[in-house]
Each structure stands twice: as structure tokens, then as C-alpha cells.
Image 1 (cartoon, helix red, strand yellow):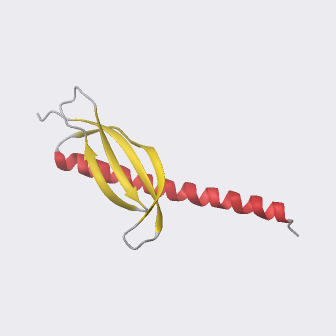
Image 2: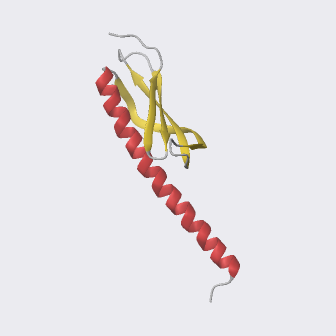
Length: 105
């Protein structure tokens, strides 16, 4: 039989694993969306990656509490300079894209 501390530890490990799997799924979603957005506006996504910068709890339009994440990525419009872009995600839905002001070739 399991003792209470063992069950608590097992539950904590399972929750961490579930969070990690969800975080990976959201990161892949954001990377694909960032690639598509960069292609749409005519800039090049650099380093083929996004980085989690902020994590918080916010309510969605239905009033449910969700994880809010802000990812950052770098892009270039001319190939010479690097600019930052951001993607905000609430739950598993992309809320906002923003790109720093950049040169247009």
C-alpha cells in the first residue's frame, strides 16, 4: 500500500510531467505560427526557435482561468540586423503577435 507522502510525491511528478507535455505542445504551436507570420509579413525567422519569457494566470473570454504565456523570437528583414517579435498565448490559443519596428527592404 502507498503511504500519503508517497501519493503526494507521485501526484506532484505526474503534474510536472503533464505541464511539461502541455508546454511542449504550446511551444510547437507558437513556433509554427511565428514561422507563418514571418513569412506572411516578408521577414525571416532567425534561429528557428521561440523562447518563453513570461508566464502568468489570466481569464479567458468565458471567465475560465488559463495560463498566459509570452514567447519571444528574433527576425530579420534585411539579413543584416536582428529584431524581436513576441507572441502572446492564452491557454492554447494565440492572442497577439507583435514585431519591433524594422526596416523594410
